[in-house]
Length: 438
Image 1 (spheres, rainbow, N blue to C red):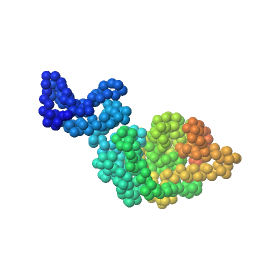
Image 2: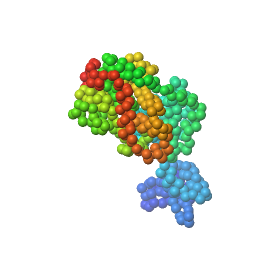
Image 3: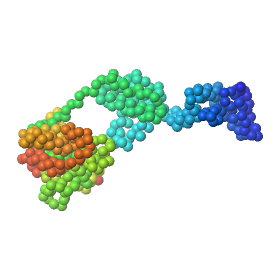
Image 4: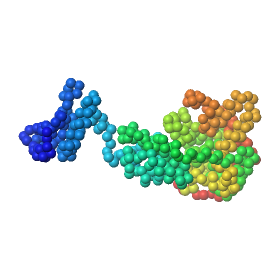
């Protein structure tokens, strides 16, 4: 058997040579003076060789430990050379096993699947609440009590929903790490049981009577506000789409309108919202068949015609006051409603509830059969870009019927109810104007 002194004194010779230890372990010394530990063994009737590492980086004792481990694997019927290749394949660098390092690798992997707003929310929440406490720990050293401590700190400031989202994100990071071979357990998987339950979501305030909605429009359109904000408010009310979609409406998304004509357009005007801007599952976002088409009633087209001379030279129909190249503020309409006394009574998103409630109630009174009522509910859900609960999972996937003619009828009926007695869209430009910066 070798001694430490014999290994240290192994000098190069004219040719490579070996110094045997025991159990197949030997020191291979090259003519250039490199000394490396190797193991000779037989597996499957064939002689094989396994390279451990170089001396003095790997000591004699460490080499013997590796030999003993390999001999144990042989007794179990496993080839230590194949196991070493597997370990090399999945091995990560020491820094990569730190939680923050691996979390950022997970984030980079998942980011292309997310919308920019969601991606920003994910990394911001990790940098604010998780990395300062867990970031410099090794993945394998983080346990359930540590994860719970992080989440409880977030809970204690009242951000219960954020705490639950963080638990999901930490669990996803560990699933990614486990699939990469870096860890074997997930300390965030079961800790949800000790967390505070997420409070039931509050309904957004919405007026549900046509007369009240007309008064709201009349009040805000008489207010001293930007004509762009007032026009956006009326367009939002007429289309009942999500406020963020209206803010980001680009002129190029409006189809079937001849801007050179002054009369209301025939039944061809449509607002096509690209699938990648819609609130839906990732796998549908790149499929043009899932673009959301919003039939525009003549009154909605009138709003766009009225505002086009003011904003038509930029990409957005309702741009920011700072720059024509940015959409309007997400709070502009809400601030206007609050200022006019509608706080906690009606919010921009409330138009969707108003539209759905009133038009479904009218269908319940006017539709001749239950089947007809169900069809109207389906069409209204399509108009709101909702999934109709009456369809099976297969039908939701394959039934892409647009029912555009019926949707246009409902949109026109809604517009007529809403704007009865209100001034034309051109009057919206009579308020104070802001200079739009190119």
